[in-house]
Image 1 (cartoon, rainbow, N blue to C red):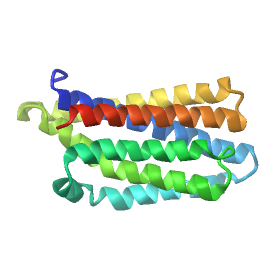
Image 2: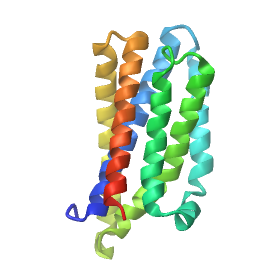
Image 3: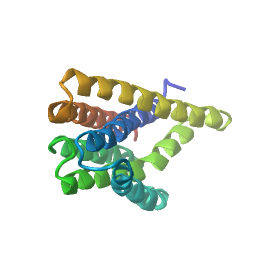
Image 4: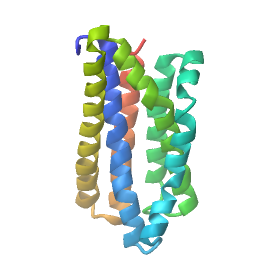
Length: 190
């Protein structure tokens, strides 16, 4: 299954996607609370732009993928997530809140654009008898990326002194991983 470039690209792009997203979702609310910008309830509510945009866009991503090319949806969506994380890297530990919210909305947009199409690419890249295995491997890639993202971006945050510098380093790392995942998707998904 991994010999096929499209399947391999979908797995790598999926892992890259969750690497940045889950690392960000782990760090940002804790940072908002630690700095006193938001209380726990407010930090949870402040994540809504990401979830809401994802929810709205993902419902249409299948139709959009039929009109646009699958390559554009998967690579473009991953790149948009990267842009959202890079925008978050420009903030002062999640401040100003408006800039952070825009970054969150971009990450939700990117996830909405590419989550369904990445699954479709993986399932269509293998024989019908292997479609269940392909789907399961995409889910493994999601969880692997998420686990590594939380661990590595959390470590990057800590190793860079926490606060603004640590958050900036973590979001830059996450954004660059997203851009790398987008490049791999662009090269491998035809």
